[in-house]
Image 1 (tube, helix red, strand yellow):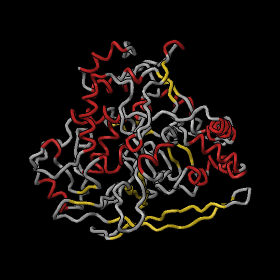
Image 2 (cartoon, one colour):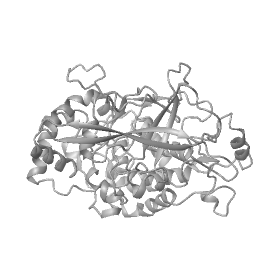
Image 3 (cartoon, helix red, strand yellow):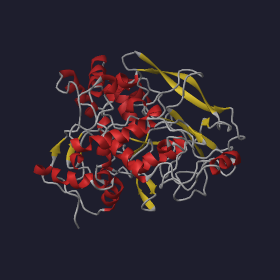
Image 4 (cartoon, one colour):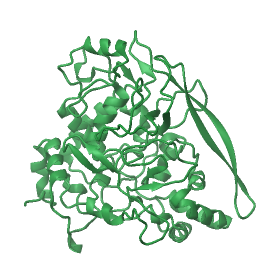
Length: 476
């Protein structure tokens, strides 16, 4: 079997082939990425930080001939979509129900979303997943049993003449945590509810799960980590008895029509970046593609269905070409370089990170597949600090929401690279799946389940050691 070449000579051929075709071949290949040491490249994709624009730069080693493709994809990611019909037919088809009209509204400056600070603040970078707890009749291609009226996601905006499904309300519960040295930290636990439900009550067993938009950097490199590597890291039975039992989610791959390992989303609910993008177009903006060709109106939302049918349903608002362009863009957003990796406190913090067990889930290094279609990201040693596996994070972070095999308390390990630039880009940090943690220390203190021991070790550290650990994390 012939695999994709890893050399730069492949770039001119790749430029003339559909991204969709390349990724289909990449995901279908049975080649194993066995690399000699001399074949492994150092990561040259990372870029110098640029303040608020630190997450919006192209991979530094991306060929110059692909810069136009990157810019075109950026335009579809950044610019707003409008209702159809419109004079700008390349970006029409918004709604009828939606959460936002542009990808960039959630992934602000290609960075993270955040929680609204009060009832009047915009909640556009936050969404609520909905699923019926305990349902047994879940289709194999569905992440969970959706609410019968509101579907799998609350849409809090609608086109004129149609009511939005509801509005997000948040209140906070303060929780005090004591450290071993006697100091205390005040955590905030968000409690989510829905007001102004427009189509009747939720199902009595519907669970609400809040999700804040994550940063977009390094996604192509994460997709390029070989499946064999993730399987090797998985330890669902905790055979090494270290208290950590990460596992791969098994999710529906629309193109393969089968269950495949998931790696994108807070619960690793999508198998590929292309499907993640298409799912966001459909769920967040009500925009159809060949992967998600139906409107996101439930069968009971008759006014929504009527408005959708008034348009041209024969036309997919996101063509395969546009989806390819957006996928290219999101695959090549670069991770900022570390600022002070040789600083003595940073180096000491790295040792503490290892010592207290953080690296049990936040795996430092991986080598990307030699078969990855974008040759400049292939066969490269990267340091994302994630294993992309599901881990039980305990009851405090549990939301009761299943997603394929992921339980209500399981979450995918988020990558840590770029952590130190989030505040520069977005003004606030808003960490963890629902944005509750206002900084890295709060995120650590929320860790439970498989990470409870690391949390306990952190509380025992001296103030100097805590400062060193945080210096390391914010340098990533």
